[in-house]
Length: 185
Image (cartoon, rainbow, N blue to C red; front, side, top):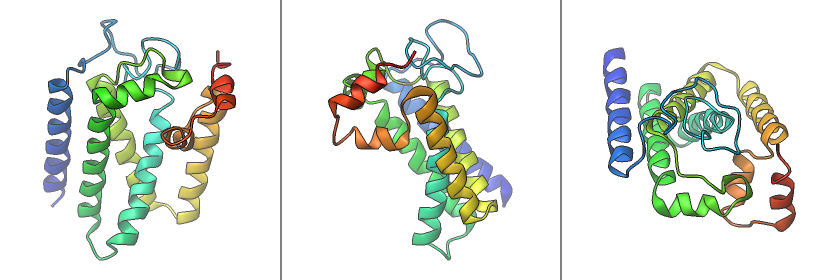
């Protein structure tokens, strides 16, 4: 049964990568190399390497997807909920890299030069969500909540941005928040 899960996850990742390639996203950073960690959110390498500060929000996606699918489909086998989670994350990554969403992000203070994710970064984000899901499947609910809050607070402190602010800014972009975010160094 485990090989079917790996095959399913692999197929979702392959479709995810092909769709991003068809959307014109680069495979790796235009700089020509891949870093495991890229900590700057204000340069062209943001969202181009394996992991960055936004990877934390993708771990939270996985935690939330586990909770959501466990609540909605409590009798569905864990493997099926995992595949739903990976599929939903891949779908989000594809939507996030459409021209309309990329242009929308560019209106925010921290994403002025944003050009979307490289394919390797987007796949790494999906892996981060998968890790969050797997963690939540083994941890107590309170532990998952504490981890999610910690990751949100860490990103907020380090880069003046996090999943909560990203969601909020789709609906409301207050000037004071843009000013505060622009103070990041």
